[in-house]
Length: 342
Image (tube, rainbow, N blue to C red; front, side):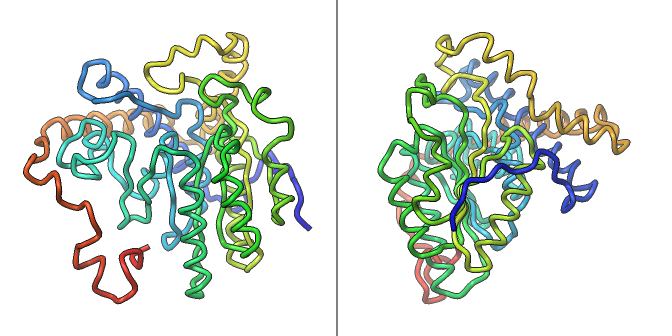
């Protein structure tokens, strides 16, 4: 029977010391890259607006760390750590932000709209939660092929007010699909607080669709890892989908243009004391790791990434119509269609 559960706060039995340091490193990289990108945005080097996941680093880091190489990730704009864990380099990310030819999409798409299919990452679209349906479709393909693989996607609390959320939940429930839905409850759908969005916590809706909903401290990378690990095991065992509600806080505005004055100052301070990086730093320091040295290593990697990206050329305008369709031989040659690589 489907249920709503609360994941334990301390769960590290399936994490080695190296894993725990890796989680911290991924979160440090995510925050450092986005802080530098915000500076580049204010300097006019990042076009459009810019969206970050400050304060939410544990949600994507912990979840992505639990997924296997053959699994597929539908990553959203506040989940940069997932890209980093899958192997996307800072230089390629900065190049993407600045529209350079060396970016993940080669200067195409929006600055946070990217995914490297060779690394198992699916490029996002802005309309949320459309990626829930993409992940569910991939999970359906895995089931039909008899493959031991799982799909995962992230989405915000505001997404649960749209019909796509319910369509994906129903599809996953009826078909018992190996898919993991990570609901980032970051307290605000743009400027609308959760109290004005829904009368029942979205995690409780999972039971209505026939699978478990699990509430997790979204500022705890290790709790996120464990909840996702268990959800993946359920999926691979044929037990179906899991909805994970990661309770966190959006510490910056909806985007760079939003000053978030609608958020009470005391709420910001309350969540600042729950910073996910600080929590993981304490754990890693107890292992005897030199965190200052780790921070310096991350800072140097970010500096090198910015320098490399700035040296990259802008894309050739004559190629603007290239790659509009899945017409590359690598996508068509094995007889299973353009999505076979996933």
